[in-house]
Structure formats: C-alpha cells, structure tokens
Length: 83
Length: 293
Image (cartoon, rainbow over all chains, first blue to last red; front, side, top):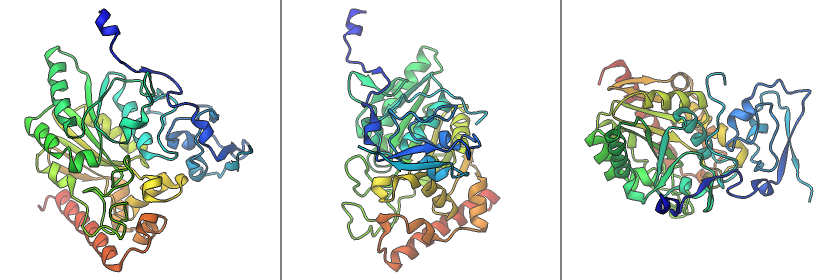
C-alpha cells in the first residue's frame, strides 16, 4: 500500500483554482423584494456558486452575469466592484 | 428542480472562464451520473479547468488521457470494471476537437466493439482550449483564429457518423435545457452498450459574445433550428419539445448570429449555407421520426 500512497494524486478541494471571486468585475446583488425564490439563477450558475437559499458565494462567483440575465423577475443587479 | 439532486460533484470553483457552459454541462452530467462514476477526459477545456496539483475541483475520479485515446481508454476501463463485477459508470467527456477530428477513430472503434460506456461530446465548435482554432465542427462562416475570414466548409455531421454505428442510444442536448440534459444522461446510463450524447456548448470568449448570454445563446441555437434536440433509441428518432416548436415557428437565424462576434460580417453565401444545412438536417430528422427513411 505504501507505493500507492506515493502516487501523484490530486485531492478534491474547494478553491483548487484559487479564489475565483477575484476575477469579478460586476457583482450580483439580489433584490429580496422582487425575488420569488424560483431557483433559476442557481440552476444556471455554471459554477454552482449560488446556494439553495439563493445566497451568492462571493469568494467564488466569477461575475459572469448569467443569473441576472436569466432571472425572470429581474431581481438581480450586476453592480461594478469597487477597488 | 425537484428531481435533480442537490449534490455537486464539481467543487467551487473550476478555472473555467466566466459564463462557461462546459462547466454548466458537466455539473448536470455528474449530477445525473452520481458518485460511482469515472470520467475519462482527453485534452480539452475540461482537462485544464480541474485545477492545479495537488488539488482538484472534481469530486469524482478523473482520468486524463491523450487526445486520440479517450474512447480506447474507456473501453479498457469498462472491461476492467466488468471483470471485477462493478457497475461503475464510465463516461468520456471530450470536446469537439477530441471527438470530431482527433478522437474519431477511437470513438468509432469503441462503438464497433460495443463497449459499455457513455461518450459525451461537448461542442463549442472550435479548439477553445488552445485559442479557438478551427475544428471539423466549426460551422460555415464562423471566424476562428485560423479562419479569420470565416470558414468555407460546413460543420461535420458527427451525429450521422455515430448513428451509422447503430448505437442503442444517442441524443443531442444543450445546457440551456438542464432538465432535458439531466434526463438524457440518466436514460443513457440505464442502457447497456455504447451511448453517445452531443451537447452544444456556447463559449463566450470563442464565440465572442458577453458572458451573461451563454444560456440564452444555447436557447437561441435551438429556437432558430441551428441545433436540434433529439434522441435516437434503438434506431427510433424522437425530436424533443423545444426543437419541435422551433420546426413549426423558428426564431430568425439573425437573432442567433447577431450577438456572436465570430459571425460578424458573415457573407450572404455562408449565411445561406448555414440555413440550408440546418433545414436539411431538420427535414431528414423529421422524416426519420415519421419512419419514412
């Protein structure tokens, strides 16, 4: 077994590619008043950065804007990140 | 989202570009396949987005192989799992370059041998990973870095090539219809033998549109008839709902071409060629569904 443990094997880790949130130019901001919790944003998020209770994980959100574009209630605004 | 499991097999976050529909597709493929799955990935975007050793974003075993060897490798893997009596899903997840151009001999061989595996080709219609060079899958008129004036030839009809092998199940899908994609992967994995799913995967930097329109672009491809969603089970063709609607009342082709920078300044001849190919494919599939040919 010892030879097996020496194999060069990558381990599944969160943030394997770093905090991809630093790529973001525009940040999604959810307007809870307009949101009807349909979950379409979470369904279409390519990186699963929107959780079940529709909170955006800003450590990893790349700011692609699909959530805001697909939202049927237009409840998500893309706001420019301030430095 | 009731029937789609909440488990994610891609951990946050891959190094895919913002708005990448490959990673959206992979999310649903892995949700459908579950944890008892091995992914065979030849050189393509997916082999890059996994992350850097000693970490990986993929929460299932992934085997990275050379471009031309993906289906051959999966054949061996499938045989090995059968020999030890395990029912692990073997899924090849390859890009269009690794399927349409380089991997086609291995693909054809594995289908001829009747290997029990699922081959998924996610098609962004060029070699996206290396900087958007032309592939056999690039449609007519599209600009790539190696066809700066637009490609003169039409897209290779991979589905017809695979259909000629008479697989028990093949389908086309698009990540803009995640439930459809999910159920097709589940159905494919429930059948023994070689299965094939061709997924259209719009690519924001390669197709040159802004990243938020990825899902919309896939939907427009289906609605304009440029991408037809259908299944072929034991030779019987079923055209899926969104494409059936598109055949009756399609959105104008321009709506699909306009937002994409790769079709900027497309010649009227190339546009006519695109349209005629799409119409021919639709006619053929419609006839096959009705059992005429």
